[in-house]
Structures are given as structure tokens and as C-alpha cells.
Image (cartoon, rainbow, N blue to C red; front, top):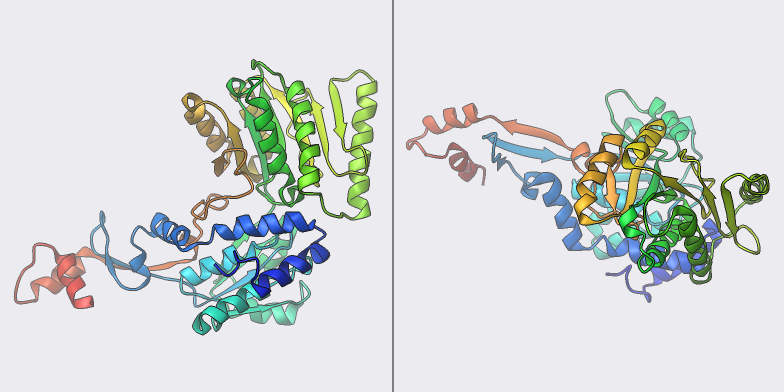
Length: 423
């Protein structure tokens, strides 16, 4: 509730400083914090605990195992070391909250690109509950500094690293072999619009949803769509949808301006635009739609169906696709990196589409509008947010039976009998 209050001093400070530190526009930062932090309410945390653990009380005591029999107890790491990336402000809260839910202390290393939020988030927890605050330490050091990382990683029971594949691989090399290591590296996401969704009345709204998904944090998140596949056979084709998308990208630029970007990234966008403009002049089936001034947004229509990663910063490709079978074939080349797909299709085809994408390697399928904002209980990169951190101890049914048979009265339910003793 504190972080949802626009008058909260820490929220005001972070909101004022993040545009300067990260380059994101102030409206984008405000909207991003509002939306992200709204997902960390108590009901969402309880949903996550129940979704992954069934009975959250296993974190407090031995609890009956419903199907296997016996009892189980879950333990989180005593200390988790987190290495945060700086691409999306606010995301460290996710990692720190999951650690606290598993009753783990945390040491967080902030990124040079975004060193603010995690510090103020930890301090805000300490303001509310001093005991929680004592479980968190947030620091910065230059990545690769061996003396510090040896201590940070060797003292931890688990290390969680966010960043590029190169960065997470470097960290993995420094983590002791007997320490649990979880890496969240480079991922690719895309959107898919089925032919049934391409009616003239609905298509503009879908284009607006996609423009929003592309524009949130300037396409820097792993859940940001790099491109959209538009299925053949709809009332509008992919080329017409690209034109609608360009109109919506222009409108989003007014509401949520793109942030400042380095010269080399702007140059990459200009180079890409020039390449496509030359191809269009040469008669190839491509079209370029771009912001009239600067490189604020770019929409590229291309008849070729190859999955090509974006150079980001609100640069999105639109491809036609003949069928789901053909799309599945196109996705195979990037299978190892696929994460999320935003989908617009009728309910009658959703299972078919979901099965296709799941078989292709994706771990999340959402509406296009919700692509930037996964639910708290999603399986991040196909894994549990809590389960991957936990160590389990089981009391097997035979141990319960032996314990009960040694008592004065034989119970019908050995687990119930021993549970009374545990209490």
C-alpha cells in the first residue's frame, strides 16, 4: 500500500530519480511502477503460495501429504544472493519478495544501470517491519570483483542471477558447485493474431494492445514482443495490420514517450530503417513505418516469415504466417530463447494455439495487452518461483505407522495422529 501511495516519500524520490538514471520517460516510469507494484498485494502472494505449495503451512511445520502419504516440511535457503539486472525498474522486488516468502535472508547486488529501487524497497520494508528489514541487505559492487563475489556467493545457499547469457554464465563460474544457482537470461517473446481476430472492427483495438506491449519500458523486458505474426485468411491482412499498428505506436509515443537511448542504439535503428527502405524501393515485399522525427518508434512489415529478433527501443516487425504448422517451424530456430506469446484468437482455437506454442518451447501465453505484466503465480522461464528455492524433508508413511503402533491407541489416520504430536 505504501508504494501505491503517490505521496509516499520513497515512491516520490524513486519516481523522480529513475528517469534520470535509466533514461526512461517520467510517464513510463510512473505507469510501470503503478502497474508492477499493484501485483504484489497480499492476495496475489497467497495465490502464489497456494499455487506452488498447495498448503503454505509446509513452510512452518510438517504437514500431511495428500496423495503420497506421510508428512513434508519445506525450508528456504538461509541466505540468497541476488544479482539484479537494470533493464526494468522494480523487478528486484519480485526476487526479494519470493525470498521472503521462503523465509530466506537476501543479499542483493544492484545493477549500475538501475541502483535505486531495490535499496528503497528494502528500506520501506524495514520501516513497516524491522524484523523483515534485518533479513535484507542491498549493495553495489563492480561486476566481476572476485574478492566480493567470492564472499557473496560462497556464503549463500542459493544464487539468483538476472541478465544476459554472457553475464549469467560468468556468475555461474563463480558460484560453488554445491550452491543452488538459478539463472534468468536472454529471452524472446512475440505476439500472434489469428485470422478470426482480424475483423475491421476489432483489429484497431488489437493494434493498440500490441503498441502498448511493445512500448512498455521501451521493449526492454524479456516479456516484450519483438514481432507479431498475423495469420493469413482474415478480413485484414498483415500489411494492413502493420499500418494500424503504426498509427497506434504514434499515439502511444504521445502518452508514454520513449526514453533517451545511446547514440549507437539510435544509429542501429536508423541503419535498419535504411536497409528496409532500400529493399522497399527495390520492389521487395517490405514496408517501413517510422516516427517522423527521431527513432521513437518503427514498424517494419515483411512478407518473409523468419523470426528475427528486434533491436528494441520500440522497433517491431509484422509478418504474415500461413498456418500454425508453419509458425511452429519458424519458432524452432529460436526455441532455446522463447518465453512469452501474446495471443488474439477465438476460444475455440485457444487450446490448439497453446499446445502449438508450448510444444515450441514457450512457457507463458497471455493476452496481448497483458504481455508486459505476468501474474505473480506464473512459471518464470517455465520454473517455479518458490519451488526451485526450497529444500524438502519427508516423514514417510512407514515411520508414521511405526510411531503410531507404538502408542496406546491405533489411529485410522497415522498422519493425523502424528500431526497432533507435531503441534
